[in-house]
Each structure stands twice: as C-alpha cells, then as structure tokens.
Length: 180
Image (tube, rainbow, N blue to C red):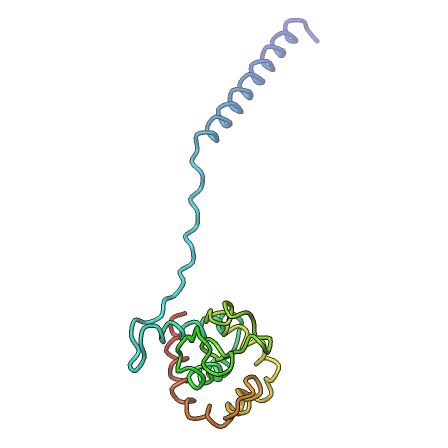
C-alpha cells in the first residue's frame, strides 16, 4: 500500500470514529433530557349508581360490593343473584356492626365463631361477599335452586326465606353489572 494512501485512510478512519463518537454522545445527551413516558391512566373503577328505588345509598353501596366481588371472582350472574338474595334476606343489605343474632355480623349475618372471619373482616362488605362466594362455589350444582344453594352456604333456621328476594336480587345484579 502506498504511504500517502495509508495516511489518508487513517485520517478518514479517525474522522469516522470521531463522528461516530459525537453521534453517540448526542444520542446519550438526548436520552438524558427526554421526559419519562407518561404513565398509563389507572383503570376506571365503575361506581354504583347513585340511586336505586327502595334502597338507601348505603344499601346500594353494599349491593355494589356483592356484585363487584362476584364480577372480580368470575362468578356468574346466577351466583351473584344467589348472593344478593341471601344478603337481602339476612340484613336487607344493611351492614350490621353489632351482633343481631348470637354473634352474626355484616350484610350476610356471618358469625366469627363459625369461621367466617374476624368481626372486622365480616363487617367489610367486600370481604363478606368474597367469603360467601368462596363457599358458594363448593355447591355450584345446586345453583338452579336459589333457596337450596343459599341454605347450603348459610345453614339458616329459615331456609325457605331466601326465595322471596330472587326477583329483586336479579334486578339489582343486572343493573349493577351494567356498570362494568
């Protein structure tokens, strides 16, 4: 190779390397000044409707807890209807924080002494609904009969009392599920 060619080639390589270094520095500096990508918006948590005829806002919130937990757990509308009818019968969707019968508490009148949870847990409507659903899932074959399924979970002294709430429970479950 000719000496003049070698020095021209070396100079061209040095220039190319310097250009590459400057380009890399420029890219690095741009990435330092670039703002962080925006955070994706938090998913909207649907809210219960403000009013349902015949219920107070607290009862609607408790009905929403039953539907929300059922939806979250993948419980069908039928299973949610069974839970809603049970809560309507046991407490009329009122969250009892003081024992009404023995040590029964919350919207499902669950008893800490029978293993449903602590008083604080079972007076949390979402916890109480999830606890109800966990037991209800064991009796899925009985879901065709609302009274049968509710009785298998609750062990009530009045097992036939759940049936009278089925139509209103189905109505509540239907309209609250439209919020998803």
